[in-house]
Length: 446
Image 1 (cartoon, rainbow, N blue to C red):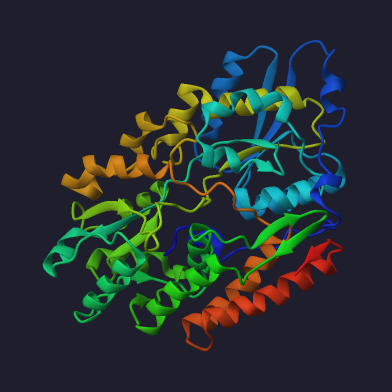
Image 2: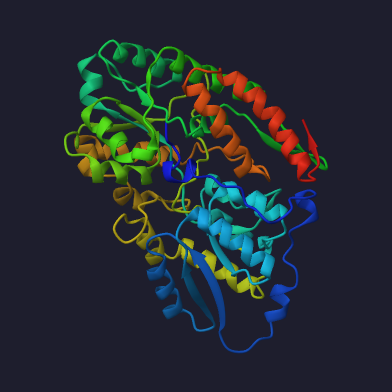
């Protein structure tokens, strides 16, 4: 399904060096950083770390338009490098004020006391952002950053092949499986499951209402066995058991793209930013793709996962920052200023991602490709904008998320090889995650 980035997902690494202890309520708070700078004279300089294309231009524009706040930008290689470098900086007491990051890391950093609670500075701007994006920067109702990107989620499919075999865009997961069985007869796979990327299980569980992590009183609650997760597992298992999926590794991403271009696999559940790779690699099938809504579970309303992306979903403010109010102001500007947003939304000057704003319609034209979609470009816009109103807002990333995901990857590979069932993997993850949290000194209920 590769809803999340293959480059990010199969390279997950544990954030090392800091003990994950206690519960979130014991950490956080804005501290005295803001107070310490309230009487300062002259401009304050805020170190800002990120890796996304276009950020240098945004920083230049910010500095040109602000006299009392200046950003000092440092480009980090990628998301995983960011976690390692931030770990070292926090330990050394010299963390930057602003950090680009993605949703799954927020809880872990908050639990380690690394982030500032900036609710008082940004809460009044909540209505400027769509609900799904705003939720990515929150933990237990407190805000630790400003969202930078949305995660519209939808299906992209090969119209020529679907039409050839009398198929319509799958409205439900049952439709999706039915289409897969028809296509299988003609040597075509309906989707691709890479053996190193269990994000399919993650996002379908999200959609089904699962909660792998939740806070229950003064402890974390772990549940890989709830009804939503098992509902997602059933869909995935049926696809695997019936051999409806390709099993191409993202290690050779060009080969994956060629397979789609050649018609070997004909659907993906993705977000807007992933379309760029298709446009860059396709030579045969441009104009033959269309967008449709993310499939629903039978009888349920539309709901899409709160996916994350390699472009960075949130700008976080660190607790060690001595100018937290100004940092929050800068983060808000970068996510709401029209020029800054356009720079980052463009696949040429920025990342080609949808902004986190409540009204993102003006940016859809650039976020999807008319070259890829052809005559389906105009109707595709509505699919994207509609999906922004159905994003899951109650998913929680646990404090050991990266370690958990790495373990999940190992088991997922066995599922793809039919060495175990999805339910076997989930039972293992339940036991493993509870044990892992306890080993870190974190209160947990299994």
